[in-house]
Image (cartoon, rainbow, N blue to C red; front, top):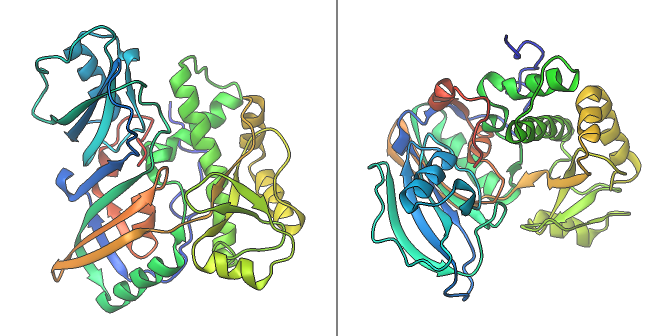
Length: 361
């Protein structure tokens, strides 16, 4: 049974903040997309948990976690990681193995696609969410367009940022995760697996957020502060509600210290006030089934910044049709959506996604 018919065109529902400079192809090869996980390492040496820095090629995070558990002779539940990484990439990330009373393994029997780069002992398990950000390097092939305009758009992105949309990976093949979530919420299908339920709820939440962000991109307020906005501190989850917008707030937003935010839908009152709250309620009403389903599932209202500031952004032309671009993003932000704001990007890897859940960046 197909669950894609009820889903709006997710790509078409993500307006850009400016004119695209052309088009290109990404992830034609696995090595065209590299990700390096950034984790704050404390001085907490020693302990029951062995942390491994792993470079994986063409493998998803959970599969690697199972391989490590098998190689170490432990249960999969004893393996921790900070976040799932895209399968169609070369990614470097940390895993932790709980080895109480046991020495470090002498070696690991792993496939060539999984390499251990380093290891250290820690007193705590590596938990989901314990991630500062990611560093990305992407190759754009088959570029066709205006190279000068592309450079202008990239320089603009450094200063103004990019809309912080959830990427296509969040929505699964053909965007089907949202349609599956709707079918489950309507009682048209059962979802007994706890992990799958979480993925479907996450996709539904992401759809509402993207819809609100799209409205604010269309009216130009996504990178500004408006009265009643919940202004989020850059790189942090904390925010405050703005009253009247004065010159100081405008300057802080312009510098990238503060960002307007949008709701990750759930139970409870919206943090925003006045017209911004009205807009958020109106968007939720347009997706009433998703909003009600998220509330019934017990999720609470949270916030996400409407824009992301790519840091250390650089680019270089390898030849007239091949661009290498690199930048750093906070955890939970998608490199593909940053790039897609300046280019029409065809993603070769999306045609290969067969699972209902796309891994995040």
